Length: 355
Image 1: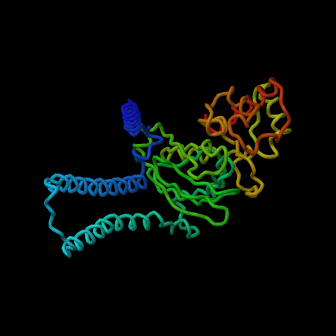
Image 2 (image 1 turned 180 degrees about the vertical axis):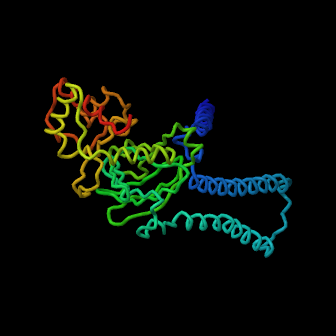
Image 3 (image 1 turned 90 degrees about the vertical axis):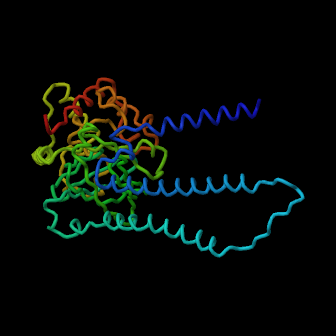
């Protein structure tokens, strides 16, 4: 009975694993590639899986044939004693070498292709390219467009069908930048800068609602699993409009309603020391200690993880430690009344650069 119970448990977990392996949304799954880099990586995954499954299948067939053909029939019969076989030894040495070469050649070729960031490194040579400096922090992301003079946070905006070059580094501990559906997964370090590029397919972006999910793929602290960011992949014309709108924000946006004006006053007293509400990159990087909130009202998530609603904004400000343990925002400002939270949330939700 105990063995039967174990087999039932194993069967249940096997079925669950099979079902879960088929799960994955177009904005999140690495098995539904949405760009050139993701296609290359997916192709290598399929090739390596095919080789491994092929080896397992051949070994299994040989094992079964040997067990059947050479099974013991008579205890008194001593099988023929064989020592060494040069042909077989050469065969099982050459075959793995060939399989490794089949896997190594396209892998090395793709690695060199992905590492080609020459246009990014040459000053003035990438006017038509998009360059993004990614800075990781505990537990949020900053995205700076050095050629455009724009800094934003938590939500990366990129054009589709165009190479986007990334320069990655960290302000505190090691993190890892990864957009599963598009590719990447490269470390952000404190002592060196990593560079690579991605391309976002327009058709696949439309299927995903023009929104992809990004993750930190390096264990970095208690809220590592909550260190998410979003990627808005839009057409070149919409991207240009977004850039123009961001550049037009020369000074903090003024609140219009009376409640939002109260919130702006609270923000100026309690939040402005850490958070910026203008997209300029004139402020030194070390002084940018918290996410830029210029277009906070247009984002899809609060703190990268909560639904983008006024109530969730209030809940986050009231107790950020509840949602992201170990974050650097906890305890940085005095406790607020419900009325103050309502006013501040009203002001933040009104921070928009586009209608």
